[in-house]
Length: 144
Image 1: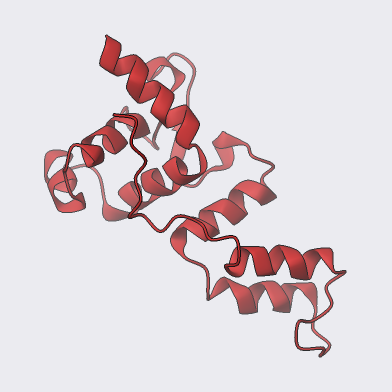
Image 2 (image 1 turned 180 degrees about the vertical axis):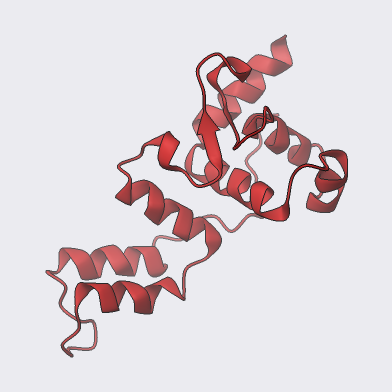
């Protein structure tokens, strides 16, 4: 159960998100040496982001607050406080565990008819950023 999922577009250090933070940390100097506002630079780079990179950016902007993660919520007393798909009691760890067992997105959507593809994408992106948390929850629930 501890194997890492490698086919979900893991973040690459030289990807667009890194370029965005380099641009921001260089006092918004344009990479092409032309005058651009910070917003224009961000908008230009956003089109190159993968869904995972967008999720990572949202997390960085939100200061790492799990409650700010799109489509995912943690509610004390619900599913042990685990991260769940918003407005459900479906924990992210259970979807990731199913994915590791070989279920594809279409099968998961069939087994969870209230979910949409966007919900699964949110779960996969949450996992990319919170792997340690989700792996621990999978391990804890395997022991039960």
